Length: 334
Image (cartoon, rainbow, N blue to C red; front, side):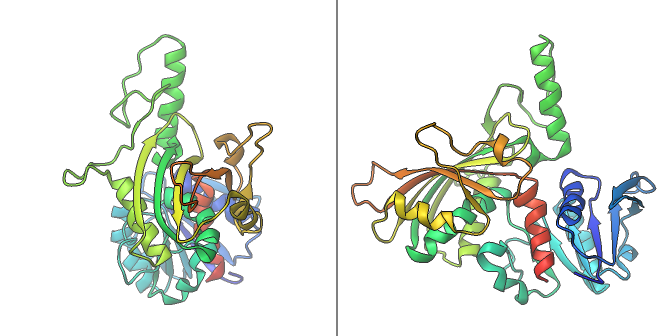
């Protein structure tokens, strides 16, 4: 990325700020960084490498001279402005769901299918945060003993709903502890000390919500295997940051927990946290603020007498590996 101009669309949002942080912490050698946001944010400043950058208004002409544009401002904004960025000569790495299902657009997790970056025609899609969290530690297993069936249950933090939902969790928790009422504003249900089905629409034909459908479809696309049987249950939990996933997967051949641990111990982007003696396994508090997917609780699925199934628990920072970090890794590989 040396001598490249990078633009961040949605620079004032939770993921947008993490884009800036990732570029700075990783020492990415840019020529310049351009921060873009809505008109109401234009003129504000944000620090980057000890200097104040002025946030500019997002318009079609804002991409002149931009080489790489990192988008995280919602699918509507991406659909409206990504074509303008591509027309101006930029390559777009988009964090929304706008382009993920398009077969012509690469959907990339660098640890898994970095080769697909070369297939882009101007746009590369960043996968769903829960899909990333699930697939990074599953891929090393799938490479040596193909996964035939996968059942996942997600425990998704407020960070997945952006800065507004994170604030709602904080305010509603404070109100609950103070014995005060706090009417929900961002989601339909009280968030403090509560869990509820992910706040996306339910498909009345299948009973799956949009988040669950994304995990299923995106996993098949990234693994390039439509035959994998996948079921997902996505739940919002009162955690500020970092998603967790419980998964049980069935492989083609018998596999042991020791084999899985050995594979994950040397897998890129994965950190093994599997201390049975101390009952210490992946937790959101440990996943927050770092870039690896933590993996542990690796054990036989006792309901499968064939020995082909493993249960595992993982956690990853939704704002980092689940969003900004994954996109920045893609940009670096460009």
